[in-house]
Length: 115
Picture 1 (cartoon, rainbow, N blue to C red):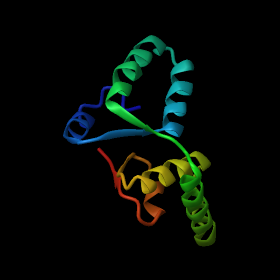
Picture 2 (picture 1 turned 120 degrees about the horizontal axis):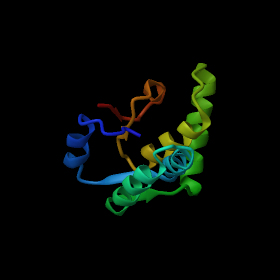
Picture 3 (picture 1 turned 180 degrees about the vertical axis):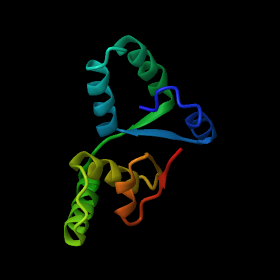
């Protein structure tokens, strides 16, 4: 989460469409459950979700995931498993990925935005 980072607000406000991969949603919920700021973060997520599409995994996503994973293995650029699923959903929906994680940059045909 970009807890209170004012640099992120203009990016979100300028977006014509906000989407959250279901994997990211799961990571948010898990992190919130473990946080000492649980109530504040639950409120944040509850306020955010009505403005977002939740991108779910389907058969097409699985094929894209397999292709990305194969390419990363072939080129020796492993990244966390959940991030491969996130990248697959971003690519499937032709959506830029908002992340500070630079390891997404090794995935072809994926646009990463940062703040």
